[in-house]
Length: 333
Image (tube, rainbow, N blue to C red; front, side, top):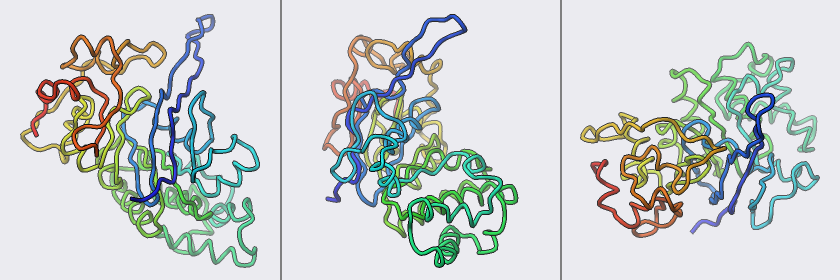
């Protein structure tokens, strides 16, 4: 069994929010008691609707934000405090690929200078040899050397995302956290960039957390998948198993909305309403106000994420663990 590179335990992150100029302050729970693990060389897909806490989770895993409770373990050691010297040194091995490549790049600097910047920041290599390393990185992401003389505004969205990826790879990281890396791109080039992430991960043997609301991309890139809803993981397992036979009603609805994942015999499951306000969460299961199968227990007791069947998959749903027949009524396997 491949050892875990990163383990997150019971992560919780709150933000104070205020409604209106004189409104009362409320506590918004962005991430709620979340635990996960990422093994060396695997890709974990983190999927869910916008606002469910995926991006916050990514920042917590890297130590960019500090959890209110819980811990992150990297190579069997607790993540150092944010902005400490030890954390800055470790960050060379844990890199973030941003959602919007244009905003992630400095419009005043050439591509070559930006890709080579991590070498200078982390004191990597001889300055004389760095231009050759930059050329190698550009080639790795499918860009020729002449792109190094260009500026970000002279590149397409897909090319800019390739540059962001090249810069993230400059420090030879063990872990990449990719935060919605294709959502800002044209649909016509999303598949190309998704293929690039898959190729890079396999070629370099990186561990990767791939954050996305696009199940098709997650299916293509990820070894395992964790489905988030309102700051919590509601289902987790091998990607193929979760997408072919989802257990949680929320996962079932997500899969049913993607035509090339669901089978033709499976009906589209429409969810009622919008996700609850994270600052005013419902009692019991967070999903019960939108779940057509909710029973009394769902409204009173919060379900725990635990193993289903042989233990390769986990779900947080009372119906899955206590009444499998009822949980399957809306899903045609």
